[in-house]
Image (cartoon, rainbow, N blue to C red; front, side, top):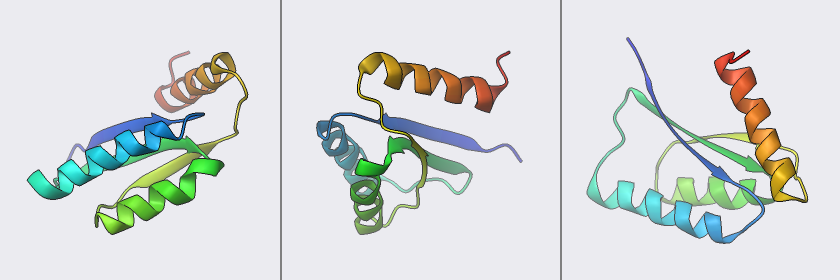
Length: 91
């Protein structure tokens, strides 16, 4: 049976954690996550504990994929590009 994936990226800016918190609260309040849907948060180690804690409080199972912290937006974007290439076998 095919599975669905919801993913988000949280890097460099702790304000993105707040946006993710709003999304998780919305899921918790207005609907359940279907059994055939996984949630993946691509993030850095500095944000991981906050993200995992939020998901546990919302009682929503998520997976995290950690990438090394990058000091510039260009390097962060490049890291995501490499992730997509590896994940989806683009090349």
